[in-house]
Amino acid sequence: MACVRKGGRGLLYWLLYQKLFLYFHVFRIFRYLTFRTVFASLTALLIGMLIGPFVIEKLREFQIGQYVRDDGPQSHLKKGGTPTMGGLLICISILVPTLLWSDLSNPYVWIVMLSTLAFGGIGFADDYLKVVRKQSQGLTARQKLGLQFASSGAVAVALVAMENRELYSTRLVVPFLKNFRPNLIVDSMRHIPHMSWLAFFPFVIFVMLVITLTSNAVNLTDGLDGLAIGCTIIAAGALAVLTYVSGHVVFADYLELQRMPLVSELTIFCGAMVGASIGFLWYNAHPAEVFMGDVGSLALGGAIGTVAVIIKQELLLPFIGGVFILEAASVMLQVGSYKLRHGKRIFKMAPLHHHFELLGWSESKVIVRFWIMALVFALFALTTLKLR
Image 1: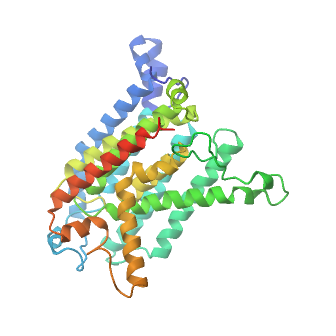
Image 2: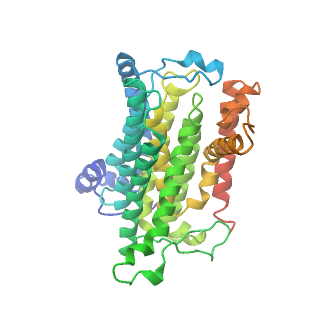
Image 3: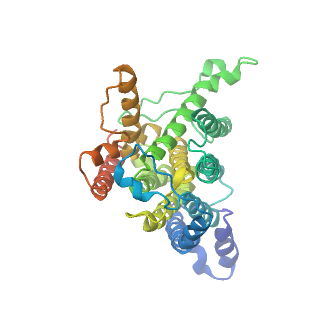
């Protein structure tokens, strides 16, 4: 049984269903969410495959090449000059199919798209400074985090507005514990004059941390050909399943999930993310013809984090994006060990994929094994739906 929404206003959805359906009943198929998700994925894949060579060639013409750190693995020095900022291709391949196939009257669709654009814009600014302006550090850590917190804070404020309209819940869904749903809003403060905004403070901070950390985790994973984008395909696929069942009356009831009908449209966005990532992997597979850069990794991480927050699966993110979390954790542990243990390190090099490279694993072996880990994590995340 497919989830059906009537009255949508997506571009192709409006043309093929709302108009042509009046004359040709065969076009009624365009009202089905599953059909539109599949076509959004295929559209994203085709866009990526077709305009990929053009984008790569333009990046070469503008001499937008990858900068390789001298202190990294020596095998990476040969990658210097490979076109980067290919994340522009990913963003186009995600957003265009979403505009074409989704219900644009759905506020969640706009929240996710604007979040993706915002984080992609931050990454673009960082890449532009590093690659075009030749500023090796790009944005400073303070500037980057400030912009990321501002963008994720805007998402949190939008969700608070949705909560006030009873279209969203700020209660956490805790894996394995179906009846334990703590609220991140302090209800006792909601009706205090001039202080009601403080009631939403814990929720806003939580959302900012989740989305910003996820965005940076994907960014840290983007260090080998195809590694980050392959893990993104798996994470986006898992999110597509979660968004679909969360918005489906039968599945949500069977799995004892909080049913949120509006979030079902995000299945189309997640499907587009899968298709766009596969299309990009065609050119990013080892040896890579193009790198995504920060414009791609930050946008993808922001999109994954935002979708997880909206569908109330924030606490499943360590499994949905398990490899991303391991990569980020390895960096934090390495830095902490270096500072607290007077220069002693835990890993040969962080992030984690470099550690295994220096242990003697070939780049392709690290990539495929990390993909396998990502798949195992994602499958475990999906099994938690019934283990409650």
